[in-house]
Image (cartoon, rainbow, N blue to C red; front, side, top):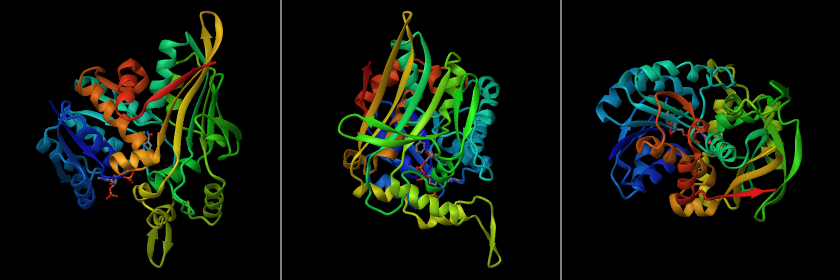
Length: 392
Ligand code: NDP
């Protein structure tokens, strides 16, 4: 018997709403609040349970406090943008409500993400007797839980970790991003970074690539090294890790368009004066690109996201892979979304369920790998993201 307040009626927010509505025994009351109320109404109309709709500007902590006092949720689920993480966390602290998000804080002015600001709130959350669960999407999120699972079930020590994210889906359009275009392009055009023997090694954006063979008919694809936020928490909580890397697939076509957009300055995040107005080229580009939620009806193919770890088990070297395959068309059939929003929204719901059913408890700010992975892994199996493991 619990009430959730979901902030953000985008691609991910829609899946979170659908998935929470599918579990009425945990999510008794669902409220969806976002900046544009029409988007929330469209989502609510797809679901045959009552979804309360509210409007809020999540950059405004006072407005959030008023909303939280009105709705009285047990947990706030933040699936707006990373820019809003801190204002929403402050509102949760003021009102004493648990908090969950899927992406770590980033300021609009600087395309760099790190956990520093959110981890700094640990003692405040502890003092307020509430919990913040950070990064409960797929990557970060499930990838942290897969790593915790490998450590719990297979390896005494993890020495090398490779997180590999493949979207082998095809939407048939010349260029589109599979989640919020602004956040996606900021992430992809940033410098790469990986962890090696206690230090971070920086690489030029997408400059390191190799071919990787994916299972279940996906086959060989180029994967590119990127920095991703779960590397920061995983190397903190598993200090025995000697090397940790994150890889992602991109089609040649995506890279060709991105290259042109970058070369002509369309991915810049600093304001430019245009006819007396100040505009940020990347924000303007976002307006022109397809809304990722509109890709769902015509995206075909699969995603495959997983973790491969090499380490020591009973004194011997051992290698393990845990992965999930998700089909874009199945996600569309079930919740009217493409697989990227689906693979993010399902773990968001499961993370919320872990908190509300008290499978995961704690006071303070936590990352996913700090909790027992087992109940989460069980729920992935039954709520649409079954996983497999390979022991080499
Ligand atoms: P969308 O852009 O589709 O949706 C974001 C929603 O948040 C929009 O409805 C938007 O409102 C709303 N919003 C933005 N700013 C505010 C504000 N100030 N106040 C209230 N609402 C606001 O993004 P996605 O659904 O694709 O992504 C959502 C989040 O999920 C992002 O943080 C993203 O980084 C994260 N993500 C995490 C992944 C993971 O695996 N961990 C993978 C993919 C995404 P409006 O409609 O008015 O624009």
